[in-house]
Length: 288
Image 1 (cartoon, helix red, strand yellow):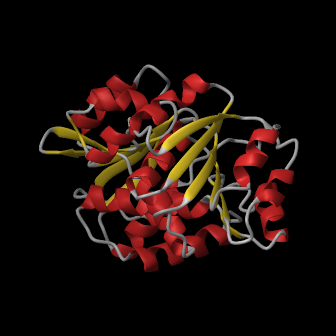
Image 2: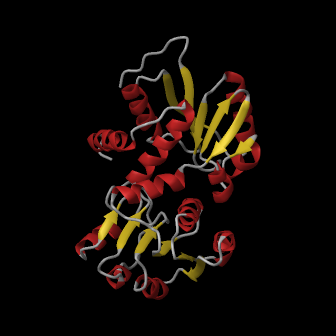
Image 3: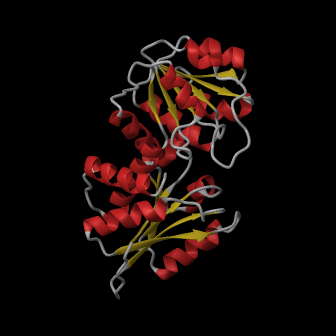
């Protein structure tokens, strides 16, 4: 990728620890190049506990904005000058826009997830959903589906305490169940969409689902979504496809949350369909 710099080039970044594996620089620089926008986007390793120092530095240097991944999303919520409704609802910030000396925190994860489902022709309105996991990724997904009109969302987690903030946010819609295979199997038999928001099955992670027979309990018109994007097709998705179920991988969410973030950074309206098609092609060429 060729990047041309000049005295007017604006700076964008993704911060995290670790961050060297991030696909965000490739995704954003591809879009910026195609759109002809004079920005450059690069990764910056910011250790845990140094988020506030980074924010001061970004303001001082004149960054236009940055994305944040683990472990900074929650801490940024209290550090930014202003928070969007999505960031407030989800309780985390993944996108910070710096403008006129002020920092505004947003969260594009939930919108990115819903857009990836829409690409597959899936709506959550009036649907019963089972979500495996209650960590950071699950929070954005669960609360966004609740806001989008899901009928009932059951969060399966090993700790009820971890799921409690999600349940408390919308107890009439969101419930908790223990992460047990018998429990998941029972829940799967009565849901329209199953979402894996755990690292189980991720590349570089030794943990895998011990059993996937709960997939066989899903109704034939149900769909299965895995937030993992590496590998592109997890064991969970392969099992679901074998059973004739619709599947959605995590790459679409990654792409769409980035498109929403770029629109915020640059105050530019992006053709989501065209941008997503381009990015899928570029990432597939890179083996993602």
